[in-house]
Each structure stands twice: as structure tokens, then as C-alpha cells.
Image (cartoon, rainbow, N blue to C red; front, side, top):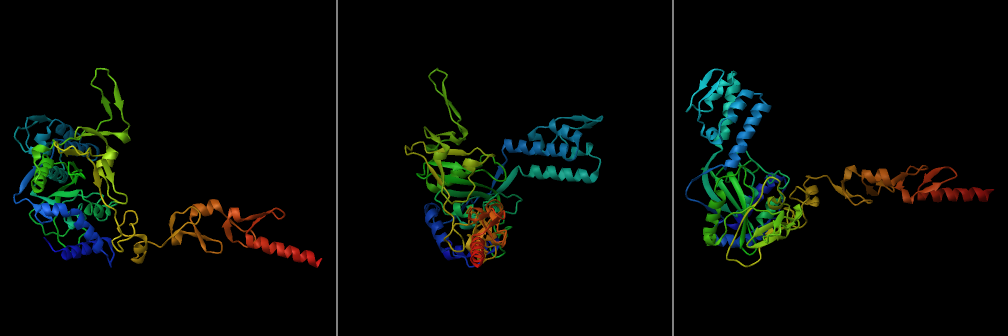
Length: 459
């Protein structure tokens, strides 16, 4: 296995480069990672990455290919106003498009497009502008090329693969990129006991990724998916595939993982993605029980599980949970058919600041407020004395002699200005001088009363 100190050094370089901070304290992070992933490391024979020795070819699912073609036709129609070409492509099948071959003769403006012609070449019958024709053909060619993904399947628990979960040179990204909204979630997955990374890499595993420094070349992922192993190792969830769905990828990677873990695939169910909103009784009564959306039931291992009871996100984990919250993906799962143990998944781990390894990071960041201020990533923040929210120090309003900060909303609704000295106080601290029809602060009330008494005594 790669030396822990070397791993820590590389992780430090990546985080310093991508997050713009120095003086990192990563000892705790690396220790938590190793403890969490030791089961997998041992199963992998002491290695952090299993790489298949054989290059494999994968193809997009029929669903994805159809969606790609539909989006292409829609773009031609709505954006480029190529109406005739759009109608022509609507007569072609998905297989015809991706094989780039005209399957049936087509007549347009008394010209015959012959069977067997390259489909992309047939675009010339519909586009007279040579530059536009070239651009449309290039776009279609790029879509067709996506159908065939070649590379080496890898299964990994390496820290750098968690950091590069959405860093690649293949023109795709997700919210877990190192500048994304859920970048801190990479640290969450790194230190849990559930999450494994599956990906396909190309020939060159020594590339410079977008938010990695030149000193740390790493594997660029043509495609990736996360596997989540249940607490009792009796079920498996497959996360969303990026950047597209590949046929049979879930089975191929599951078989590789099971071989590494010494599990027998025949003792596990097929992949399912059922989620029930309603269950009808089989007694002929026609009665059914109905669940609301937040209580959808997952039939797994001969039982019904409320999905929010089945899957627990650790508090403070900061990852985006596709299994519970994705509007684009209905998760697939498989279970050990011989197991009688209840099934439960614990996803993620509590994320700590990469600088102090103590405080939780600020939202969308990997560092806490204190360390962010120290490294000039954040403006200094203060707490509104009135409502308790955090506000940038230079955006606060200071009252009571400039010592008490409040936010703008509270300043407008809860603060009055003394009409004698101009000082600002909470309105419930101000006193109304009915004689002179003005609001006075406590200090001015005392001063005014003293003045009135002195004037009375002199008279």
C-alpha cells in the first residue's frame, strides 16, 4: 500500500491548491479515512484501488441515447431553426443515428437519400451553409462518440479519488467538484464506512486534473458512480451515474466488488429501483394503503422500509444525497437474499475544517469561519445582537455608542435614533418626551431631567 505520509502530503497539496489555504491539519482526517475504509483496504489486498487488467467497452443505455437524440433534434429545431433536418431525424431510429447509417431511403425536395449512406453526410441535403453544416455534423459526431466508452474499470477508496470525484478532463462535472456547492461532501464520503467509488479511466492515469496542482497528477474519470454498502453489509445502493448511464455498468462493477469482498452474487438479488407510494392488498377487497411522498416505501429483503428510516445522513456530512433527494435519479439497490438482519444505510461522516480539524466548515466551504478569516477567504463576521444571524463585519450597524452590532433588517425595524444627540438604541430602550414630541435615549433623558431640576432650583 502507498505510504500514509505520502497520501497525506498529496491530499494536502490538492486542498491547499484548490481551496486557497495553508497550514492544514490533516492528521485527524487521514486517520478517520483509514479507520473507516480499513475493511475495504484489507479486502483489496492492502491496495487502495483495484484496477481491472483488461480494458472494457461500455455503451450508453437506450434511455440515455434516446434522450441525447431528442435533445439534439430539439436544439436543431429551436435554436438553429433547421426544421427540415429536425423532421428528417424524427423519422430515424435511435440505433440508426448512433450507427451513423441511413437505414431506409428518404426523399427530400425530389432528391433521394440512399439507404446505407452515412447519416451525418446526409445532413448536406438540408443545410446549404458549409460552415453551419460542419458545425452540426461535429456536434452530432460528438454525441455518437459518447455511446462508446472504453477504459479500465476501477474501484477505489483512495483519498485522491474522493477529492476528484467530479474532477476530470472529459468535460463533465457535478456539484461535488472542488469548486462546487457540495465540495465539502467529498470529505464526508472519504471518512464514512459505506461509500466506494467506481469509475472508468483511460489509458493515461497520469494527468493534471482541473483543480489539482501540477505536482499531483491523477486518474481522470471518463465515467463514475458511487456504491453505498449497508451497515450490516447485507445490501448495496448504486448512486447516480455521471455523465450518463451505461448499460450493464452496475452489474459489472457489482461483480468486481463482490469478487473483491468474497461475496457470492447468486446470494444477492437483481438490481431494483422500486419505490411505492401505494400498496394494494391481495385479498380481493380492492383496499389499499397510500403513503405520502415523504414516506415512500422501499421493498427490500422481504420488508417495506420507509426511505427516510432506511437511509440516514450523518449530521454535518455536507454531501448531496442522490438516494434521498435527487429529482433526476431513482436509486437502484440490491440485497443479500440469505440475510435476515434489518437493512440500514449510514451515509457520510461529520466534516471538520481542514485547517483546524475542529470546527464545522462554513456552508459550501471546507474551512470554518475563524480559519477562513485568518486566510482572508471570508470577511470577518459578527453576530446580530437582536436576531442572532451572522453578518459581515463591514455590513453591520453599530448601536449604543458603536459597541453593539445589528443587521440591516433589525436596524430598520427595531432601532430608533435619539432626537437630541443622534445616538441609536433599541426602540424599547427609548423614552418618548411627550412635551417636546421626541424620542430620547436613556442618557439624554437623564441629562434632560438634571437640566430641568437645575433650572427649577435656580428659580
